[in-house]
Image 1 (cartoon, rainbow, N blue to C red):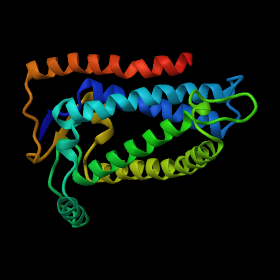
Image 2: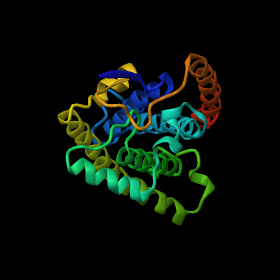
Image 3: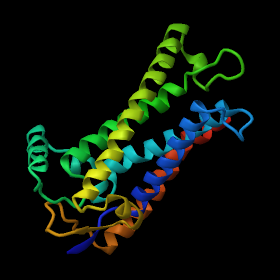
Length: 227
């Protein structure tokens, strides 16, 4: 068995920050929001931070480390179907990063979360709260964004449940995905089809790139926070 460094620090920070902010967002809308006096404001600010995180992840998916890049885990429909067939057969090929089905799930969740964060910028309760971009569009557009926001929230619940179920399935098959997202290292019994080839120098360069992209992604968050 080998232990490979797969998930870099930016990916791990993104993942657990996303978990915390999505949890906070659902909590402030699906409960009374205690101890917050004005839960909708906390919900909105959580959304701004989510938007910054997601912007970073889209950029990191294009420019980041090997297993973070979309090109490393988004595969052809034929390859994805073949992996699903072999998974059902009990002996799928090993992947250090996201497997083909996991890659599809990552893309769908990123799209859904991004649409959720963007649509939230147009929301209003017509009483106390109006999001920063609410006045930029007409009433019909606002109604559309609000309907989409609520419907997509239900879709996100389904996607999150599917993600958790996938973690259980992989754990039963001996693959500890949760632990790998904490340590960055993944234990594999077989040589993976996507074994990383990045050395220390490239990882250090990736951290500097992550800092630059993080600063860029923070700019819209700062503007929204003070809008």
